[in-house]
Image 1 (cartoon, one colour):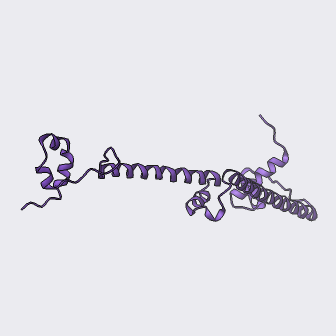
Image 2 (spheres, rainbow, N blue to C red):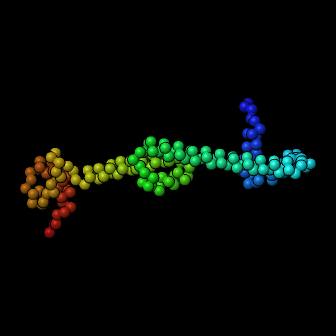
Image 3 (tube, rainbow, N blue to C red):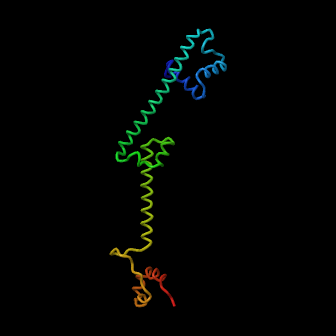
Length: 180
């Protein structure tokens, strides 16, 4: 098991106090009451107690500043990674949907990549639907033109073989015929 030093222990105690929503003094008093220990002796001279309290506050501020700096460094690294992956994308062209994902905890490069992939998938799906619909709308002949829509008179003049060959198109054309 890895040994931890006094500074790490103190950091953990401060973090526990912060998580409990207490100041360190309150937290230590609660620990003392709960476990019957006194972290600071009552007979400690006032100037030493004040100096100790000041040192603790200083340590707390240092820890907060270190966390803030770490957060800022992580954000700067994330932006750098994003610019390397997507050099042509400016912050103003990133859609709100991506920023919502970032606010929910995703990092910017991953959120934007997911957005792009999702958009490509939707485009491919739309293209496939359009292709199927265009194939259903008009069957293409060998020369790229649409099949002719036959009139009633043209069909009456066809031979039996021509009618069999063009049967589907004739049935489609019949929908537009007017019968007297």
